[in-house]
Each structure stands twice: as structure tokens, then as C-alpha cells.
Image (cartoon, rainbow, N blue to C red):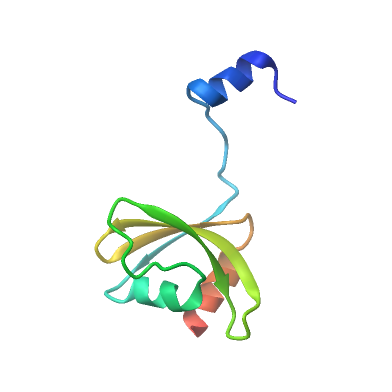
Length: 97
């Protein structure tokens, strides 16, 4: 467990954590939010630029493919953050969707 000073920084200050192993995808297109809205569990159709929401990407049978965080960085662009080593699974589901 973290010592008291580290915990205090995490709660009241700034912490730097290496998250480079996480899956990261950039997706673009005029209907990207509609696609993610249909494939996921969260209402993403009206996600404002500069905001993000968690969602669960599901298969057509309703099975969980991956838990994602969707960041809308521009009108037709999102960045998806998922678990380590899950880029291929997320990409395959989005292409199939």
C-alpha cells in the first residue's frame, strides 16, 4: 500500500502513472459516435467535444468485448482507451459492427 505522502498527493495533488500498456485507438468519421452508441452500453450519440464517458463494447449477442473510455476530441474524432492488449478485439468488433 502507498505511504501517507503518496496517498496525500494522489488525493490532493498530482500523480504520474505509467499507463502505456493500455489499448488506445483513434477513430474518425461522420458516424463514429453513432457506431459506438449502437455497439456500446452508453448513450454516446450526443457526447460533447472535450468530454468523455465510459462504455462497454458488446458483441451482437450482447457479450462483453471490452470496457472502454471514449474521449470526443473533435466533431468527427474520438480516442478510445481500453485494457492492455485489447486493441485487436476492439478493432475487430468495430469493423464487424
